[in-house]
Image 1 (cartoon, one colour):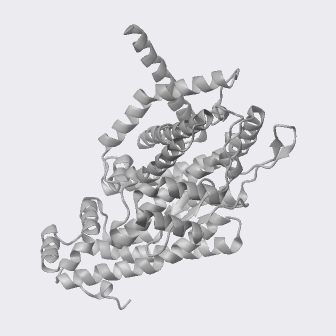
Image 2 (tube, one colour):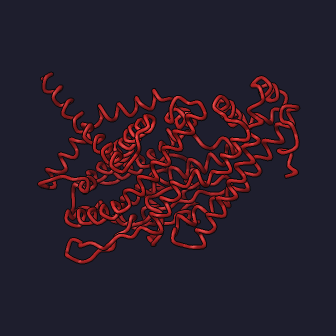
Image 3 (cartoon, helix red, strand yellow):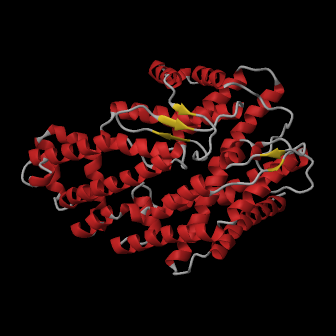
Length: 473
């Protein structure tokens, strides 16, 4: 509490402003490894009582830190832009904080009173409870029944096993049985999760209104340096113009696999069911290093360090977070979480997460603390690029037509994930927030209908475009 951040007026001298920004940065640099450790421990096993307790303790401390920083930012917002520019001219060391200061000034028109901002920051654990409750429920409480596999044997089911193994299974019976068991379990939580999501949306709508934004969408996009016109243009382009290509692919897959019906559970079925390249973690990592060699010696050295020093948590255990992600705390190396299954598909997932790792490893090494995080609007570019490097390397390394086709199918899978899954989620969210802004209660029934309308529109758009092509001859 004796830090200059608390007892010097930032607007009086350039040195005072510098002292305050340095104190803030030093505080956050000390907090980051503690926050990251608690978060990653919980991701590794959400059922661990010690990890749950540490996460709760850290949340409380984080709220205190955010409340103190809110005081500093409130004072910063009282400074005229001209004063900040003058101080930066007088004291070159302030150049390090340009991005942070610009963000503060851009948020100034939407700031509430200093006291209100401090209270909101102190309440951050409560305001973040919809997502934390959902995450805890999913990792610690939700259990799935076993299901009947391809040969009639009982198969264990979990979030990770479904996403990383069963929905990719070449056996239709196994794939669909796994999906049915997975879907029925999720349905038991339908109303609870709908309420949690409704609370999150309501929170954002209320905050946007209090801050003076035109909508919650405007508020959420503002911090990403993206306007609504750009966002809606992307959603509309994907939804209206690129959808038919994915639908043609789905139709082709149904014909090739000779399926009488084609459902959601079949979308990730392999087109060549008898061909699934297997590999080990070590071989896959070495292949990735070879594929990414064009990125240079520094990048290659980072990859070797990631492999040798075990940056990747790849075990399949109860309570582990689903999917895959990369956490990159400032001042430390990145940490990757995934579930490894000894398939080349896992190599693409690993390459993807190493793309995030490489991005932030280099950003953390060469940028100041406040300038390492880009807009999430373009956050997937390095990771997707890594997948393309790996795929092209594999194509150039084989003459096997089945292997070449398999790699091309991985590219289509990446397209599906980025331009179908995420964009349909974006379209769903756009409609949900529109309902919320109009005051409609976000019940499970309304959310289900909204999802159905999104998918229905997806298919109707294809029919319209195909009819237009027929008219054109």
